[in-house]
Image 1: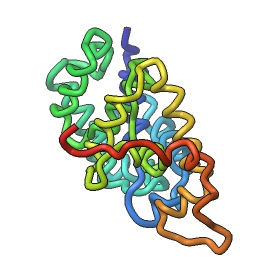
Image 2: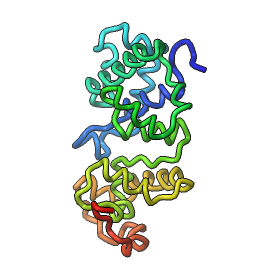
Image 3: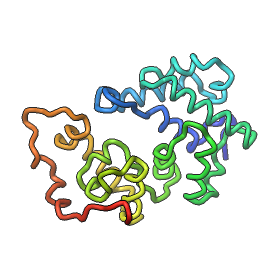
Image 4: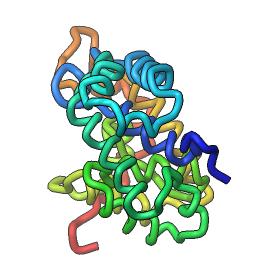
Length: 222
């Protein structure tokens, strides 16, 4: 069932993933934190208890509510595109229909909503719909265990495809959570992602290196 205000859990999940996205540079590497993302989402819910009002009021009102999370203009466009697309295609602001779709069908749906990328959809698949999927964000992709299993030239989409092929479904959720936490806390991996070299950093500081040093490196033809 969808509440009358349109705030279904899946819709909130997509909007949360959109509002929580980080940009490049300073925003990606720790200066923009989950605290900012959470605050932006809380501000959005407080300013628009009924998300349909995001379409009724001017765009700047939405931007102002999530500005603390960064990339406010882009995120506002994504959120409004999602809501307007739902209204036009389904006649209501509700994503409950996703429950009846397969994973591939859900991924195909995202192409109908401008600005909703594959990472946002995979986060919703795993966290909101409890499907076996393995989102790859900056923290996850920074772990050496993941990088050893993807081609060196792989873009974000290919980096997503490879671990989803070799990680057993029953391990995807737990492993994703562990690698996400590792990518945030491991000094070596954080340095690798942010390209900032700390004085006390060294190659052997990552506890995963001992486990992944013998992994075969994936190639693009596999």
